[in-house]
Image (cartoon, rainbow, N blue to C red):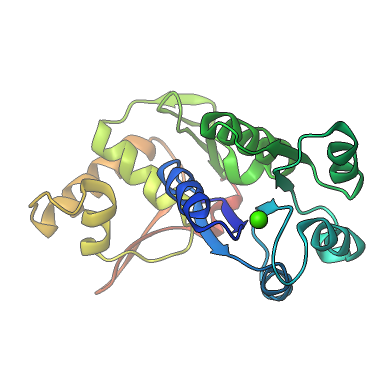
Length: 232
Ligand code: CA
């Protein structure tokens, strides 16, 4: 899940951005001051920063300049949100090291397209539609799974189950967590259903002499083996 930090002091705009980004699957944090954003960015880094130009505490321009001067944030993707439309001001914005900018009022779909474009360029691993582990490849867009180059046909539930497990390799999920994540909160299914589908998934992906990428953890649940990077 790509992380986006919004630094914007207009609360309605900040909320609108958060809502739209979350709807597209981003994990969002927001703050309203430039100086506060600078402190946060020293503690942890998002995958992308949406940065307003005029901010209390520290201006967006100055914050961007400081981020570019530090090795840790030198390459952090930044989109400036600016109310200034004049050409000279736009050039100044880009000259401080922003990757892109939008002029307020901007269209949300246009901003979302720019967010995606910049993340694809700067952080391909977080927006990739392909999940890969060992000799298994899962394409989230076309819903295709291959092992060792050969296509594997999975039912929709087995596909979602594999996708869910592959997204967090090594992490052990309880049957209840798998039910929530794969079947959804509102569906009533018995926990043994999870075992049935894990069994089907294993049967489909482990044909011939191959290593089982799914680990059963007694008394806990299941995990996608993070030691699976070496194909056998
Ligand atoms: Ca502002």
